[in-house]
Image 1: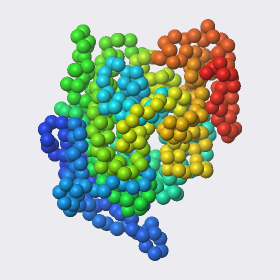
Image 2: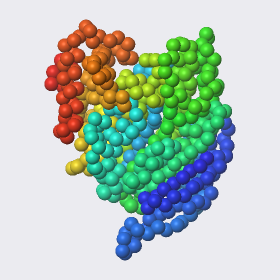
Image 3: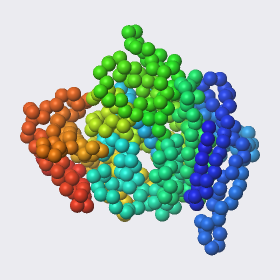
Image 4: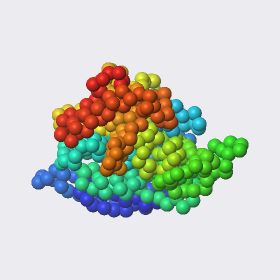
Length: 496
């Protein structure tokens, strides 16, 4: 495993930790040797200018898929753990390629996701986080810049910059080099790129890439917590994983458990398909769905263990845990398989979003209004109490987390890379292909939420609805291009 870090001053380094198996086949122990970590200490001239090298004491953390056993420094007496954090904190776990329909909380009955469902039972479940584009950059343009995909590019402060101005300490942990490049100019106090090879399916769940990523993250939780306590302020840990777009290294035994009598044998692939088009073999599509489901099972187990590991950080602190997908994953519903399918359908646009306050054990309500990725950044800023200038297109839903009424969206618009457009209301989904040179854009209309997978085009039967939604789409585009506030409610309430 290779861990690369960059602090807020641009200093780079590499950490190398060797995994060591302990406690049987379902846990990981990573033994950290003393390693260089840069800590900021103030000087009279510039309170943020001085870098001081100090080795981290040797510590041992066990991240087990059956539970986490704790973290303590070797200098502490046995049985004494690091004090809980104070202040307001947030952890954002973003999983690329995770579609909403993969979770039991969103209606999945094909395979079990017990840990994710348990988290959802204690969280505010956003029913309809609707992406404004099917590509990963669209998600971060909304979540960090607060701008819809239809907006022109302008210079504006992003969410990490606004948080940095308020003194919030921010860490970024990811296994995606693309995100490292995107965040290079942003004021993260520390950035970690964690990479591990997956040449073949893992023998056990704890040897998967995702388990290693979260294990390494757990090792750094104590340091993140100590830095936040030192400043006596707020902190953010943004954890992004390639997830379902990364290695499909779930154990073959996990795939075999999902195969029923008469099904084709499970695939032995490790590389997630980027884009497979024009598939007409049902057995082949089913085999890919089985492989995807096994990888979701890996995520489910790892999220359960990671949540247990937060017990040392969350006590006595206000810690918001958000788990969400950054884009969906097509599994043959409309002739394509892969994360790069740009077709404006639910499998690529409908994402999960769970908001959980650590320590809460009480069930929460569901949030039924539409949301878009800009709402993620707006909600995060609201959590840290930042008002004033912020994401221009986002709406915070934090009041819904407290059980209060929240004025939500009734319109969500998505933009495809080829010029395709889609508009979603509570009752309808209209897709419009990019207009050709000498022909009008073709329209498809689907009744929602009844037609979950958009199989029944009713545009020819409801021409008036097509006309209404087309007018709303044109209105939305006009506001986006002119810089006006984007409409969140259709003019015709019959569309709701």
